[in-house]
Image (cartoon, rainbow, N blue to C red; front, side, top):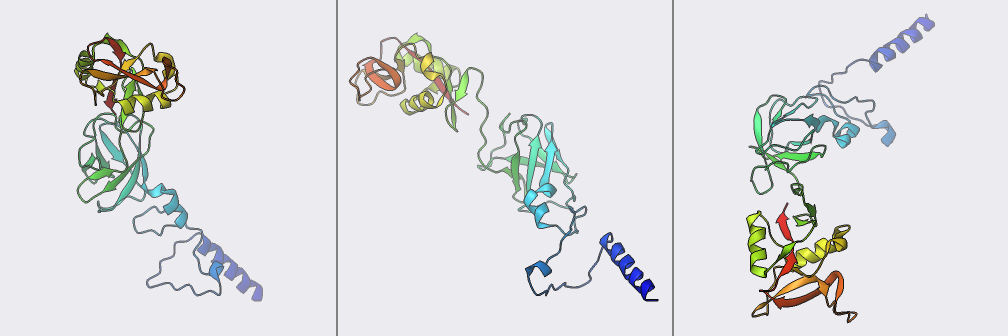
Length: 263
């Protein structure tokens, strides 16, 4: 008889290990130490009202989804029954986003994706294979963090916010150089942009063929600043070629130059 009782208890425990347990009221864990006051063995939730382990929350497995196309179809498990302000999801697109991309979470309806300033996303502001964190503000999803488009062909990133041309353009006077850059939706690089690009871009020094115009004519009546070749203010070398060498020359002279543009 005792053997049968023990077998029944063990069998009941085995069933409980694979069963679902519904608790109609509060569950108070009052064991003698921390190891006895915990719930373990929770799997990733499969329904919106299922319990979630700390591990599942930390891994964000329930708020992550791949996406593709002009409308990011996001499928979360468990599926939310509504959009709620503060909802935070991570989307992994398989290609750069289209302009004005929207998100549809588990068929709840398309919602616009905007940047932190409220403007819609332009083409390729989220790269393919790059996770994007989206926060729902009650009306639309806001892309968390900065969004910068990749640099176009012929340009390299010189900082988080701008690209610099990989090579200088044919020599022109200072004013014509400004106009040419503007005609290609760019601008003549500022002194600070050129210096930063020179220091940060691999192989940049090898592209310098002579003094280059930068958009700086302060404290000069008829001159403008050139960089790349000139005095470095340290060694006394008059014609050094490096990132810090500079000079001034009449704005009507012909010098090479390069354009910069926002990312």
